Image 1 (cartoon, helix red, strand yellow):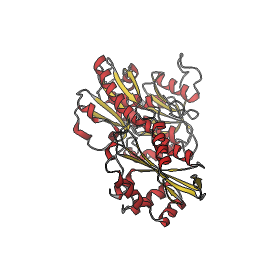
Image 2 (image 1 turned 90 degrees about the vertical axis):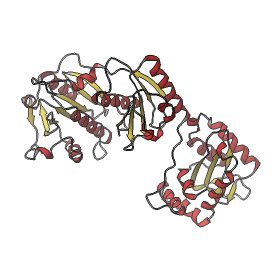
Image 3 (image 1 turned 120 degrees about the vertical axis):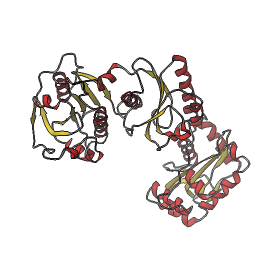
Image 4 (image 1 turned 60 degrees about the vertical axis):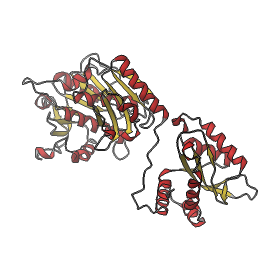
Length: 453
């Protein structure tokens, strides 16, 4: 086996355990065997049985526990580093500082010696092991292993991750549910499209919506009627990522309000473990359907989505480690300004319209910086930022709003009740992003740290 392939498979963790049993239990646990439908205790038992049969201490500072399990995969390697040392239970009393756990499956039952030999070659030098022990952090250990394997800096290969068994099961169940209820689409929320079980999806001909943090330019396997939406907002809860995906699909005319969508989601973007059924409600229509007297959209859908994305980023990042609250008022600018007063000199005044477009990614950091100002951003329907730090003085907010809303949210409700504008607010205290139109809340997204669903 080539060292480059081996290094790409190693996952590295810091060890705080003091004894051999607790260290091995920890390394088995972080390997996430539940994703394969295999209990961690079963893997731990196999490792302990192998340890009892033959000691796996390779050198005074290095141990290589390994075992076979009943698994369809090939191998997993977890390297643990301890700065203070671990009591490995040997008579010499040496403190082990590197433990490399190797678990092998059926695919390598006949050729497992190659993996062991490759690991021994990688870590046989006592001088190199000491460098790993003394390394500043895990990233440095990764770089050292890559260099040892002859991999150029920044070119460390990434081993294709195994797709958890529960993800495969949930996707198959989602397809069956789409067929059973006649849903219009199946939506999956993932980190990357290479974490998707394509085999059952390729055999199914329905509409597939993928909400991903990142994806390649071309969809793997060339599946038809597949639509990928970038939602690089891991701060959102699982259902809010799905809701944002539904919103993006609705803005692309891929969904209707009259039929269901089956959503498969997970607490993170790798392991999908929940099924839900949603219907694009009327509030999605409210997000995009407001027209002026000439029948044109008051706010372009692209502007709405861009402002919403910026609001999510501000809620997640804050500024200089401090939470921020802000508000975007989109569209119907002439009428909005009748209820407005500039608190500070307008930082956007005097610049060409082409330099003030919210749709220009280069303006993002400028917007985030000016979010520190009290007041709102006033944005025209085509995305041109008219002003920042603008104080709104609308009439009283409409009745029927939820209790507990602060001044910013009440102002957003009021300005949208008396104009055709849309308002997007970021709560400084909770990080919740709320969309107002016609004096009502039509959409909201919460941080995952507050609500995991």
